[in-house]
Image (cartoon, rainbow, N blue to C red):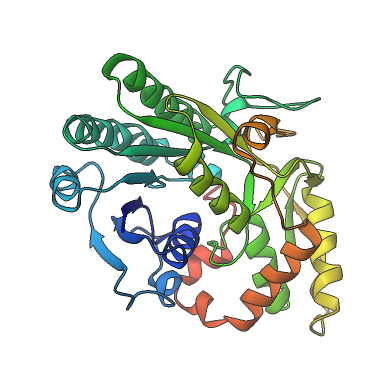
Length: 337
């Protein structure tokens, strides 16, 4: 059976990907340096599986190269990254270190490893690298125009991967995905933050006027796409992964209120609260994902209505998830400003 390394596997997307990989009978090695967004609660369903192993390691560390040669993975899914835009505005350096320097070290390690062993690197990135898409949808040929330090750091890492494919012939693929939501997401992000506040009878913070539009994809659909890219994707290519369905933040909030009303009794303080907007806040992201649909026959399966219900139910049934986090990270979504 094939060995797979997932970096950042204690995080949101990484832990969901590992769960799916184990269900598909892969052996998985989870590499995570354990930061504020890493959570061992995320792996409780499979932590005792004989197909799972956890190793604490920063991809910037020389130890990472030794891990590659020891476990000889058939594929590496790179999800090790700082991801929250607000935090990148407050402290860009940590994003440069993790998302650029970390990826550089990973590439150097993988370059040596892939010369001797047959493997692939799937580098997971974001739609934010394309910047504001005020009309239409950005295909893989659309120029990168990142707005935030986070998006810029991810754009740099994508270019690094692409340069190593061309220059050193490493077998790597880049994916750019839209906004994920679902179980196990840190409540610094919009949807789990809103759910936490609904469950705790608190106001629901929305940036500006709530008109910023995002393309929302259920995390398990994203994970299915990543496995499809590993199995059928072409080396050196970029693949957009999205749902083709946009909602602005205000509509997301209203949808959550409607969904929660059917499942629990809402407290009196659960009301929308508009807060000062994020600096440089992009208006709209929107991906054209026709390439992965036509070339790899991947299509999202979970509608937003179904996904938001599944997500709310998970947090409602896993209230202890919030207890596993630092309270200051739960109550403070908007950075230090």
